[in-house]
Image (cartoon, rainbow, N blue to C red; front, side, top):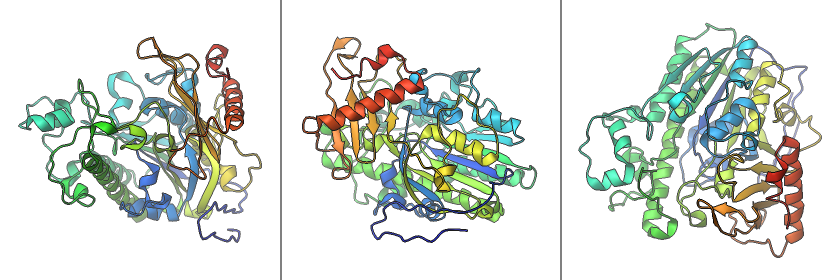
Length: 478
């Protein structure tokens, strides 16, 4: 039974508690990961100009986590976190999924689940990356970005090839209708799998991973025209990662070009929302809401002019590190809904799913199940989130981002080797998120004691995770 609560008019955190003896161990679980999906482009997180009706409707029936953050950055390291429940940037880099790690799909299979992966995020499958490991079945929708897929020449003009790259244009050369776009194909595949497997399994886990709205930002024309109907300027550089072409910074583009990129990205967001909405409708039509948990999240955001950048960078400000997390529990469990301002991170999702499934959480898992938070049973909250690129790359990250409920610190490495070994000094940055959510005013000098306290908490957190002392020393106070 839901407890009574008062909803603050400015929508501060709401905790809904509900009583039950034990979660049903027979629920289905659907996890949707939409790559590079900015939290602030969703209506349920305060956006008022982008159309995301379907995810907003899901959010009204769900627990919405207002302070969800990434751990490992970017794409594949994040999936490593999701599949293992660990902060893998400590000991791993962008690499195939290790064969000796205990992973989510494997553990769920041992608990009696039918496990299925539907994916167009080609990095997870290409070149034996093994993220299909542990699944009973997997479908790969081919052709995203630089996937080595199509070879036929295209008739695209040079300007378009420069903006999007020849490989991508080859991959989409047969695209005619909206249903041919990748997120449409992927969500359609998921609905078909649900139809084929209707009432065929005691319980299932379905992981759906779409690369959209990741670059290339190339939605159907009508989606871009929702947000920039008068554009006549042709293709804009910066909306794709193109081999051999340097991506522009914000200062290289005109305000009109940056607005065009925002419109293209917004169009991609709305396209994702439309097709996720079709999947959600199919879930409802099949009567699955009664006994199915649904999660929607992303691996990171992106920059579209903020902080001088276009695209993702290793400098993890809020636009990249702060992510959406929407979790709808089954109707049979009361479908608790509301908002939660507890600090949570991507490695928490694996133990949460296992907790929902009634499966044992492996000892190696470093994340925490979110069910005690949802049920109002957790008495000790996480004080900080730590987000970072890999510690085992050829060069250590220039910054590690540590975030509390009030502050964000980009803790700079001391005497870092950047750009192939040249010495360059980077400075730490501190922002008060309650007064400066866009992180425009660096308070590091004025609030050094706050920054050093956050840095100390970060070092302790990383040490407890098993980070090497020689790495931690590079980020300790001078």
